[in-house]
Image (cartoon, rainbow, N blue to C red):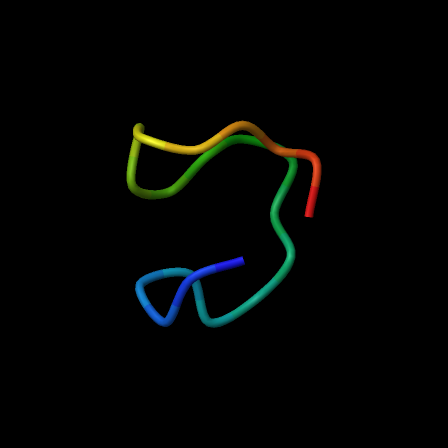
Amino acid sequence: MTALVPLHTVEPATGIEPATY
């Protein structure tokens, strides 16, 4: 999980990392 993704979401908010966080 990166700082770019504040919350656990179903789809990758950044489009870089998968939703496995």
